[in-house]
Image: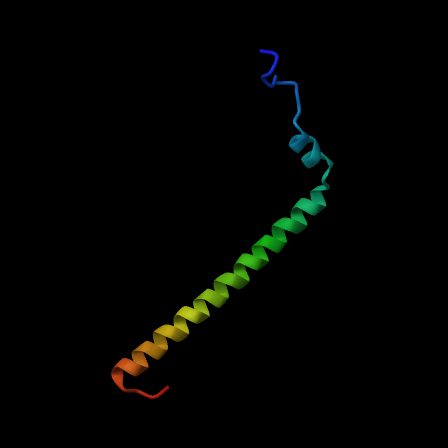
Length: 63
């Protein structure tokens, strides 16, 4: 059992995460949320535009 990690041992990842400020975690979370929101809005606009163009071309309407 000398090669296995014990409960009290901490990995380099856990030590690194403990060194990061909580404000940094919140800033990264906000940035991810805003980024996903912008991507979702752009995706919605693309789908709406393509759908509208398809309906107009299929029905003979100009738009």
